Length: 234
Image (cartoon, rainbow, N blue to C red; front, side, top):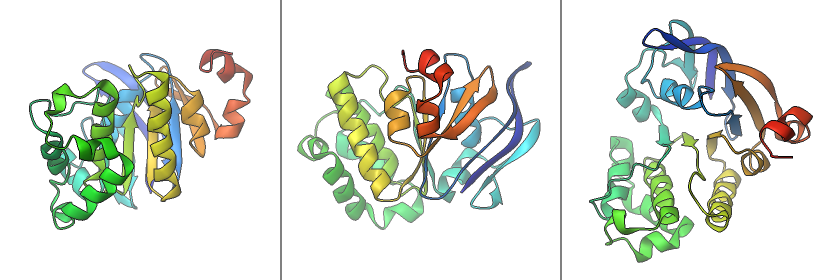
């Protein structure tokens, strides 16, 4: 579904990603792990067309998106849950979800998508007329995920899902990720804290100083001594 082939990404004069290659197959959940400054967010922004590579290319569904503008990539079926949630805090929950269905292909199934999101996050249905900025942090994260799902994405990108959330809410969020996985939603998880992400994914990549250094199945990475020490706190 997604192929990233040997890309070099710069921000200004500074090179952030070096000869980076990875793939996401249809129906997979793939995790990219890395510490602060490893290049994780730059990678996600590059997939979304916010940075264009000096070398290499990106393919989505077999078509090049290397130099496509972001709005075209979104129209093709990529959606993002950004780090920090970035909901529209002065709008209601319902209005935020409506904004998620902005792509033309999603508008015709707005009500159907709403029912799907409400089945995943019942609290959003209860609070659909509430101003989004008054929600708890966990509820705002649920709203950010729901908003992304409203576009009926083929590929869902999730950046630092559990940042700032309590362990209880984090478990609830990952329970929803498991439901989406069972429904066949293809996802790319960008994470600094690894255990839950690997437990709910098929494969993973380790990104260190802009380079992929280790890759394998999630079980292989969970058993890797270096990863256990560096990312799992073991």
